[in-house]
Image (cartoon, rainbow, N blue to C red; front, side, top):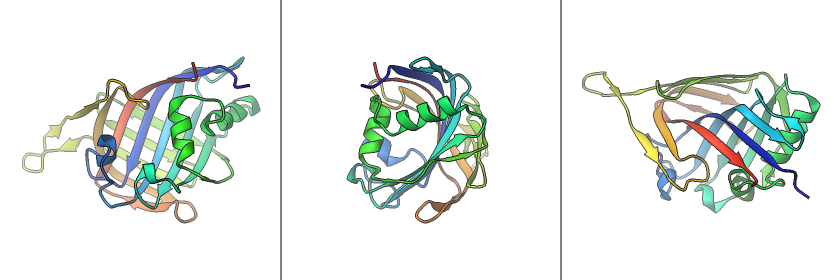
Length: 206
């Protein structure tokens, strides 16, 4: 039987789509496939009687086509400062086995699951400022900044609002200055001037 869990915190994502990411609107991805690296910082959370406060983890994912077509690959990386109990909790939750729409949905389209890695996950994000940085061991290093007007250089602010979204209700959209990912194929890619997403999350299996 699944244990009750919840987590609230910050999410920083980078993918190979153009700004706006057609996938957010049920349209095919910009390049026809999808490669992404996503970092999570839990401000408040619990899995059964295990506190998840302060836990950081990341997922590197790739799909050969649109996400909903499946056949994707995922690498879970959990911060090496987590306790054994916290590691077990995140592995169970991220697998979709403990319920919760976000993880259940993505688990259903990610059949190729690599063994979890435990490494330092560095996470910095300012949602309103649209800036962020994610470093995942030796596997990934990313930086996000605001989108800028090509004529004036002024910051351009845009949000995506999905009132009934399973991932977020509102996300700030930024620019992936760079994201270097060096896993084994297909989880090896470089992104520049592509979609970046910065949002709060509030997930549970309730």
